[in-house]
Amino acid sequence: MRKIIFLLAIFSGFTLQTFAQVEELADQLDILSDEAKKDTTYWVSDFSAGLNFNQAGFSDNWKAGGINSVAFGSIVAGKAFYKKGKLTWDNELELLYGIVKNEGQGTRKSNDRMFFDTKLGYMLSDKWAAFSSVNFLSQFTDGFEYEADGSQQLISGFMSPGFLTSSLGFEYKPNDEFNLRIGPFSPRFTFVNDREISLAVPTNYGVPIGETTRIEWFALQLFANYDKDINEKFNIRSRYMLFANYETLAWKTIDHRLDITLTAKITDFINVTMTSISLYDIDQDPGIQLSQGLALGILLKVNNK
Image (cartoon, rainbow, N blue to C red; front, side, top):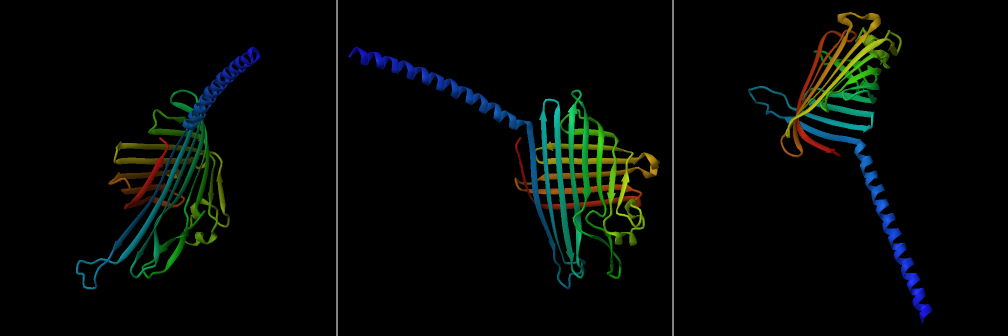
């Protein structure tokens, strides 16, 4: 009987010790789990997708004038930012496309933009960092110039033109709303894959006639972003890009592009969005090009903030 009691005592002590070790192991696993959860905070992401539709119709005897039309537009935008210690990796994607159909005319584009930017940075101080980046700009489909007689001439297309710019330099970022990149070494590749475009655009977007690519090795790029929520229902986002080729450096040869997007939130899913582009590039046109759009539609936005 004493042996049985002795064995039970040993077994109970062993069991209690085992339970204690299991509890200690469980606590350690909880700590590791919490650390794993913290790792996900290194990423901040934001994604939005929107659709808008506009329609206008008039009877044959409508005296005020007008034309029957249908318009459709879409936008997809995403951001993913990573920061751990002094290392940062920022990614941004923006896709816009819209079409309009007026009575008596074929379907035409009202918006067409493809933009992607990725940047790897290393913090030098609270506000300054060294960076290396690549950004790409083009469009999805062919663009045409329309004559009064209804004829059309091809003036652009996918990768016609297309711009691929790499940059190496320093970034100033005083807060989460604004950043400025200064890239004194920023080679740019300009593509015009459709050689028919030179027939309507004699400058061929700076690409030599008969070729499909122009490389500008020695150049400066300034790249500025501003993204701010004025309040819970209104956001302003702007992007400015300057490109200057050292070999042809002159005031009139410096390229400028300013994109501005204003978004007003009406309900959780319905927004009014205004977009505008101001562009100066002497290889495209000697004047300033302007584009503007206003749309009411559905916008779905998700993030992990």
